[in-house]
Image (cartoon, one colour):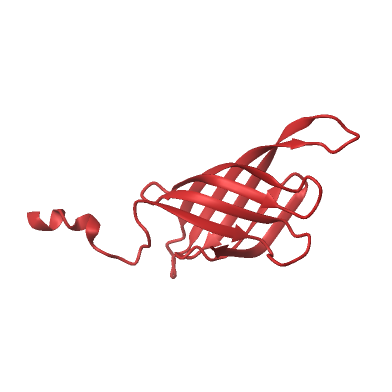
Length: 139
């Protein structure tokens, strides 16, 4: 029995990656002209469920590109085919276009439903942009 304790954390299971790992995903309708796309590079601490990393919004409009830190948490559905519910938030400095003058902190939020390979669907919102039910693909 005591000999099994040392192997406890090295035994494989169907729970996905353990420890600290990096995942990169793209959220949005890639290939749709003018659609906002969010690229995420996230560090995941599997035991705690904490997530942090960098988000990059790209959109083919003036002032449509933003890069900023995000953080959040992963929750497990625990039902049937276990899925990961990922909640992220962050802020970036948004400069208003001329002729207005000034900048402010804009809030970003994202909610993703992914499987253990980080593919699924989700949505995000920032400023006056609200995107729902778009593909999430691991890259």
